[in-house]
Image 1 (cartoon, protein in one colour):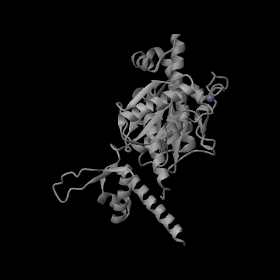
Image 2 (spheres, helix red, strand yellow):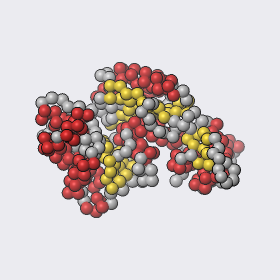
Image 3 (cartoon, helix red, strand yellow):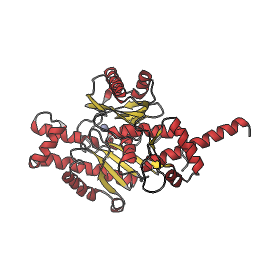
Image 4 (cartoon, rainbow, N blue to C red):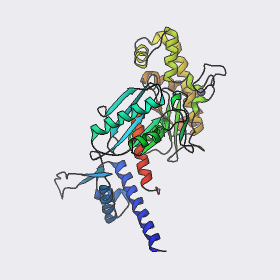
Length: 389
Ligand SMILES: [Zn+2]
């Protein structure tokens, strides 16, 4: 083996160790070098060298030593929270947002900027760029990258959103690539259902799960699946489009052009449409939530219809993917314990008994905002070195 080969091999090995350490810190939170040595299975000198390298690159930071009653005070190593930042951009029908966090990924309201989704792609890019610049300026730390959560079909081979049924201005575009050019920062495109999966795994209840799914029943009906510790992608990254399964052969027109898709019947958006039809005027999400809480008797039929189809969607996911946990994202049904309990009653009727017995169904704690942040942190960790598990 030549000197050059040797050098490449040792650089790769060093990076793999550093990644292992990054993952240990992400998983266990602020830890002493001694604790990292224990949980990583690496030797103390290797841990020390890897920590020094990660410190130099600004990915982790050391906390001032805390006084301990016994022994020497230990310095804790944590993901860089003050000195480094990542941004999350959520592009959605209705409202977009930009949030900044440290590399530990804690999302807060005061570092979030929201704005109505502009009507054209050019205006959208301008608005996102302006919000990113404002957030970066407010934060002041070195920005390592931006995760961009988008609705629709993301083709990973073509690196574009090929088709976005609920936000057509994104069709054939890649806002992450365009933002990267404008801002000169690494930007990654994350399909919003995958973002929810990554968010749930990073900071929700799925931290120790390798087989779980997130069903997003808010605007569209999206599905993200973690199978054997990997995101289910399919040939081009477009797998999981459960929302466009036909549920009513001649139903209402869907954003995809077809009729009677499951997402026209099983989502918050579907319930808003039905409430609007009943009242003869458009109804917003906040008003709908209040109406359903205050006058549930007046909207029994509408609630029952969407409950039934959401149960069908949940049953389909459980029957097909056999997850240990299914997280359901949404406000009007999944966000109300009482109405969600009724959905779960219907799920029992629709799901194979053995598959249902294997699966917990819970409302998700994560959000697309958290997911966009998890998407960029996931990318930074992955691009640091390949994983050996
Ligand atoms: Zn459709």
